[in-house]
Image (cartoon, rainbow over all chains, first blue to last red; front, side):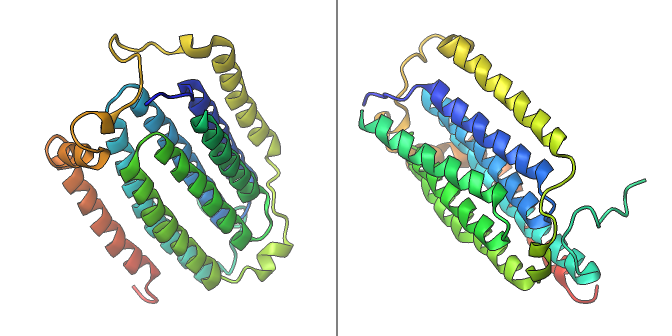
Length: 103
Length: 173
């Protein structure tokens, strides 16, 4: 079972994916799209976990990825409930208009 | 050779989906692009012999989380939001973040494999399925012995999250 794809390729892909997630997170004004950018970043981290795990012949990275996915599911459930509540109370999804906690 | 072709295929899928996710105006288009990106990542998992994570990615991420996203997008009224300005004024901050990540990538590219120090004996990859049993069996062994406490705590976390989201989304608390 030979591997033709070196680790650095996976890490570069993961870094680009993370950068796209960061850009979307800072760039977009729609809460739902910001939330999707967070999912992108989580996926980038998962990808590098699995790449290292594959390289080092260990399953620990897979376990961490599994837990990251579980936490992402919990986060999505709570976050989307918060988004629904915000939309019900304010009828907007613009992050700039939801700024009550700003000093 | 085949590995490389599949890597490029899935990497292209992942990056294309990610770029469309952060640039599309419509939230539904963004969600569908994100699904494409997640499928690409799932393919990359499979390429690295992480069969269990491949299945979890498809079932939990695409089947669970993204479905939740699409439901919420359909529950909220986005007709007005689509006509408004989509991109934040803090574009220079986003640019700085992307430049930072780009510098990191450039560092990796110039240093090559020498950028990572591996312990001796871990030189050649090829994991999991080669040794005792398949990937799923090994993961199950580790999950129910070494990582039993985190596993149970994850289930507790999910329970709390479900109860919390139901309470948050209720009409009257």
